[in-house]
Amino acid sequence: MILAAAQTKPTRGDIEANLLDHYRLIELAVQNRVQLIAFPEMSITGYERENAQQLAFKKDDSRLDYLRQLAVENNIIIVAGAPIEIETKLFIGEFIITPDNSVAVYTKQFLHEGEDEFFQSSFDYNPMITIEDKKISFAICADIDNPLHSENACKKETDIYIASIFFTPNGIPNAYRDLQSYAQKHKMNVLMSNFAGESWGYPSAGQSAFWNNKGELIAQMNDSDSGLLLIENKNDNWISKIIKK
Image (cartoon, rainbow, N blue to C red):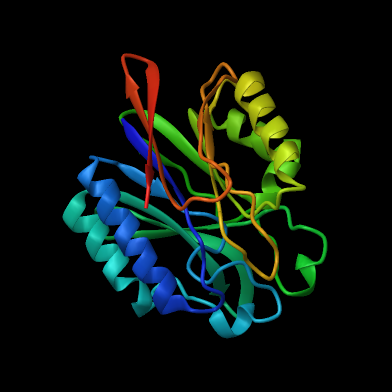
């Protein structure tokens, strides 16, 4: 199994530029035989609140067409984030785009302070996927601040917990502490993807990382580069590779 966390520098509100960046990183992942690539929170738009409604996607959005094509043609699962409108309600969500040309939606369950002015939260959109008999669950940013989220993932027998986040330099130590704790306590492997560049006018901390199911930090990126953190499972041992873009 080979997984990748994409660490990106979003262009605020420029969906076309951000999608082009997604395409480049996906192609790089494909060259390295990656089976799943996960991008940060609201990766397609950059993190937004006030402008989220104007930038929102729908599940069958035609702007996802090329991502779907890449997933099908390259047998890769793509996890990319955006504000998502479902039945007139707006969510912080992500699309799980799979090689069978289907699209599932995960929505953020626990909102950060101030997000509830613009977004709804929901537990109704919480898909799991399986790769090589390993169950994979998803989280978005402030989800990881609430221990209930990882506990629920554990109850679903999650093997790999994938967190797409936007954390600043001030917040990243807490993210590391919590994700390491969840990995160790729940015996889950944890993959985390964060922005490296500025988003919503705030600096991002980068440092996308992976912990094994013993809570050991296997690899992390730095705080400034965009690129991929690759993780490969070989005989129950995880090895890593970082590719700067």
